[in-house]
Length: 341
View (cartoon, rainbow, N blue to C red):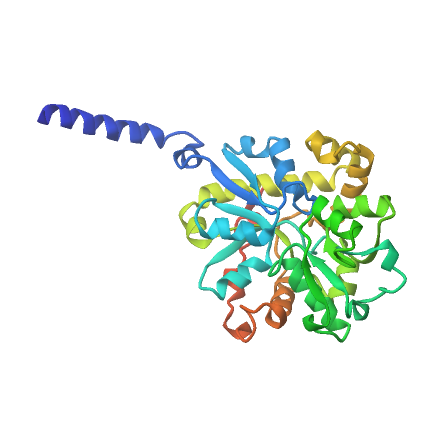
């Protein structure tokens, strides 16, 4: 019996040793890397699915499984629970979570601007022309406590209002947001492409504020507001540097690919069902939003400071704790800076 156990132990060690050899060993030993996307068909998170479509994960020897939740706030909860290793969502969650004692860091910053638009129902466009006109209105956000909620509060403040001056409505995204515009559930709301493109093309909505470009974001928010990112638990990043570097390689190469191709070429690489039966409209949605992606995956320090400034005013978790937040722990450029040209 002792001899059998000794042989079994030796075999286990041998198998473990073999498992640790080869270029993809570190990625393969832990199984698939699960990444939750806060709405995988949203153009603001397009680099995640596009990387998969281009074979970027496979080229790096990674086994990545992309999952989706409609809200970034929901996606972060899945990460905290340990059910996934990363989230493609808004950077501001890393700051918010730090005030709750969680260390979450952005390892690839996909965009320097939100990529969001404030859409007004066509019938209300003549009376809602600026954030000051939010007063007494029903304002749609993805969900309470989401990035769109904080940004809406910030815009209202610039218009001389507070969140008590309007009604916050959970409008979700995609069809639920469109339905809220259709049935009068909201007078205006913050959303992204392709939802924005669908509302504008059908005449159901008009763009009030456009934060899909650097110029538009600075006009609406007073500066850059880094948003779409790949963020992960700090402990996982520290214990899996090889996998994180490979993820950074894959994502940055996709960002570079985006900069070198047209909206039509990008749209053609995406799953056909993302176009919802209208490839031309989807290509337009991509065209209107691709300017948000930065091309290098690097965080801009001033942008991170601006996000903290906004959250310190409107996030219940960050209010009064601005000086306690260590921004250097909310993002890192150590991986994206190493991606070969």
